[in-house]
Image (cartoon, rainbow, N blue to C red; front, side, top):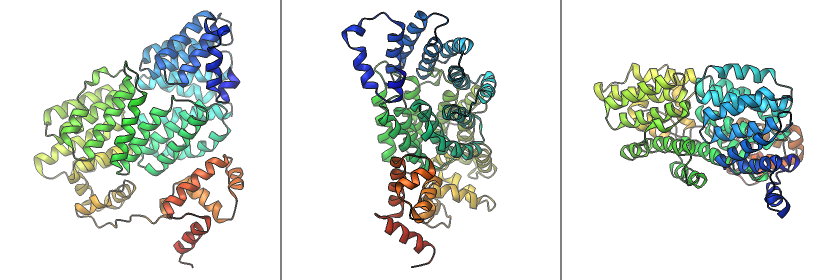
Length: 488
């Protein structure tokens, strides 16, 4: 089973489970195999039930018991049953004998505790650091935890810098679940940092791995990230389509995380389009239904911003206070909440002044520029107030360019070229690295060897480079570089 899973032969396992000999077998291993299959197919409640069934049948000294408990915990976590997840994962950690089993239990414990805003999350992160053994999987799991901490509490920019180094390890990992988890969190951090182009590149890499190994589990989360990146780049219609596609993965009984995450993003997308009444309707469900405190705080802050844009002063203020009380360190509720307060103050006084600066300071302190983008799109006077402050204007314009909001900036009086950056400057760090090697004359295979990635990954990078440069061949790409240097 293990080798088949690592090889991505999910269909083979499915056929084996349906053979007459196995179909009605009352076996712990068969139950665990069914749980592994359900987990990869994003059937989280079924995966939890099967893994728990397997755990109940394994003996206490059975080597597969920690794995069954961990899989039950991970499935419960993805099904928005964080408290139950903690119970499974604590048991798994207690009896784990191998470092890999202990690591998988601890990363699950960190994720569940982080979702609930529990202080024990820091303890689990410290343990995860101690469990590092230099393997690709341990490096990626630690990368996931550090990115999660940053996207929940701040220092997003620093986390991205560190994660870009870790990114090179993805190609060495044998476990596609570790790779896709890391890429998901990296894409999320890049979106919050308004590095939207790099986020899309990361999402494409994630989806390629998911397709290769036939795992559906990370796909809806990748689509949520794609919607965020498309919203960030003003591709509003594409963002709506990505959110519509997420609904294909929501089971008939619903999925709290996917449902409310989609609603939060949809609401902010509609606010960016100045469709305030529609945004309020998209965000009308009560936040108390969300068990994850981090997601609940984000959703409440999105409701607060929508209420502010619709002129509901008291309601917006109440929602901001509730979000802050539930998850005080939330980077999204902090910037969205201050944006809402700035909008409310602007409606009263026609002058945003210090309130606008507070939004910018929060974005800088946390690294969450995406919520700032949503805030000023929802209320362009906020952008005008920021650009009127000479010491902030250059830095604000950098965010404006990344968000392709030059036209909006011009509409509020800013002097900014619509082109923003030249084509070469628009390359992501990884694309620029590949482009530099292309210019040396290396083949795709040689570039792959130099960067320790697959040739397919190199081809994907080159395709994105060609699209951004507006060329079709290597020769044209080189000519573009020479033209950028002023040579012919």
